[in-house]
Image (cartoon, rainbow, N blue to C red; front, side, top):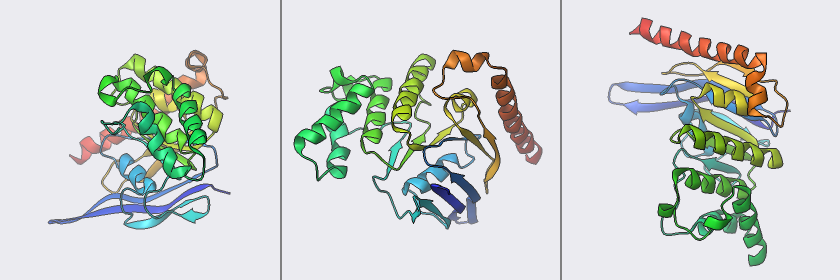
Length: 263
């Protein structure tokens, strides 16, 4: 039985020249604890799908079910990590993580909430930066705060919108490993938006490839059969890695050809 369901999900904007259909008939089922990456060209509607699932963007048609309940607006049962972590600049690292913990664990004692925060700060290797404010942190460290904040909510679903897209390659690799280490502990149901083929292969159980917009939808789904926990070097040495990569790139290149042909 599906733990997460996007059923005929659609998003349409009203414009002076008529309706602009961004997403049309997006369907996806996920099992509990599954990690899915949504891949596609820029502007294909990936982030629009995630924002509707997060409850941050009104759904025009269709519905989203999480744990057999239809979502209605944003809620802490969905932890969201954006490309920019959106930290409150006047708060310390600890306070930024505590903000969500206090809302979710309002029934817990102050000591229990503090223990939760410290646990996740340690998990992302930020204990020594707990009293620093966002302006004192690097981009990678700020994104670690975003990951700690999302996981600390113990959400039913983790939503990641290209969280490492603005980072350099080395920092991206480090943060991918931090994410996987946390995910291996918690096994949250996760949906991640990315345009990085290698990132998707390394992280995902399945990769959902979207057609080009307008009216984007699921074009193809690829199952990634690498065992977990994963080692990056082992995966890249596996013959299946190149097969997956070729399949994904072929899909994306075909979309480029279609765009050029349409133009």
